[in-house]
Image 1 (cartoon, rainbow over the protein chains, first blue to last red):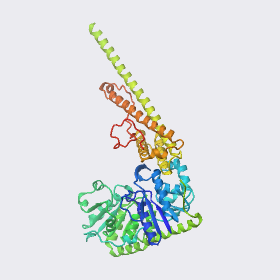
Image 2 (image 1 turned 135 degrees about the horizontal axis):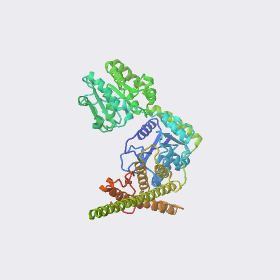
Image 3 (image 1 turned 60 degrees about the vertical axis):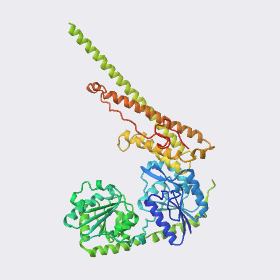
Image 4 (image 1 turned 180 degrees about the vertical axis):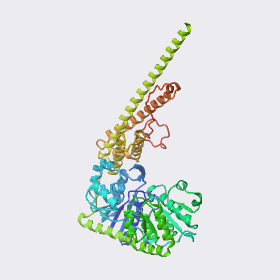
Length: 376
Length: 196
């Protein structure tokens, strides 16, 4: 099948939606489909050969923060040309309610259009004001996919109808094997954390309290942290003796991120909420890391109700310390959890997820006919 | 006897002075209120025209959606805070966001010529340009009035005698309102105008 994927956010800056599209595109190509992705990007940006740049994204205030989007008549004509030259069997837009390429693609195309909604949309009143503008473009979508229950709920609330739930994928192939970072995990054991330190719902503060409890009894234990945020600010309340045993890597490359998962004895996901799927958790599972995670609905589902990783009551540092301590003391428990995680994550492997997406394409194409580009 | 006359004259002079100062403060407050009202009108007009432009069908849906959502946020902030935030601080950010979005939309190369000949486009563009200019002027005059009022109220006599009563000290209204990017035509451009 010839598939045209539309990415609304700039390819030059990494993000969840871009990673999703990259994973999907590569999995579809692996399954033998022809794929072209159009994305905001500089014309001279280094891009994979399946990505077509739609010109530089413009930073604009949107939904309470600054987003880098592509809009306007020039972007629209680029999308039109890409659609005409592509001759796709199906058009698959991502995040169609964002004011960017996906919405423009819905505007200029007619026929089999599939859309994936990634985020729960928080600004419902602003959406209401924009509804007439969105409605006419979104009406053309014949198959809707939501990556999470939360995303599906917003979609249904805003636009009615229903959506198929197909979760995010992870690329197990890219994650399952990597060398630990030099010197890790070390004889004294190591805990790991990945995510923004300065975002309270990621739960880094809870992990710090648990680490303090554990480190007092275990002289060699260290904590490895990767992710965006001000290290000094995050550790401001941490006693000095403890600080020496915390290694902050800051923002890491994709390759180093994989190595972080392989560098720790216990991977901690102390999130307090707001996580609709937990891509970090799924990546850690794919890397075979033994996991201890908050007992959030989404995490419980991904970790098979505790079989593929221990769960602790959300927000409770003492319980987190107890669970992590148990794992540190029992190598056979860790090995068992690691094997169970590797097995459970197969459901989220991109080739498996991409097959579900292809089923949606196949359901939509016969009914919607050929993809055509509306005259200017 | 002479002493008594001197005392009476001094008391009378002090009284006249104080009442003159109080009257001046009163006039400053009246000017401030009028300037604030003018600023509010200008802001409402700007967001209304932006919203009208967004729903005019002249623009592509992505641009329309972007403009509609920022204009709507600005309108909501003008109608008063809902989350219990301070009114001033709560309004400045959405108004600046509207400016930035307008700047991004109008800053596209060839934007104006892409609308050439489209029915109604010229009128809307002109109206938006004039609404943005109104905001620029009204904000300048309002901040002028704030500065004058604050300076008058900082005077020791005014503070000692509490001539301003319990009125809260006015705050400057700080937003981005130039539709020309800071780097493009240099600082101090007095006329905001739509480029492209």
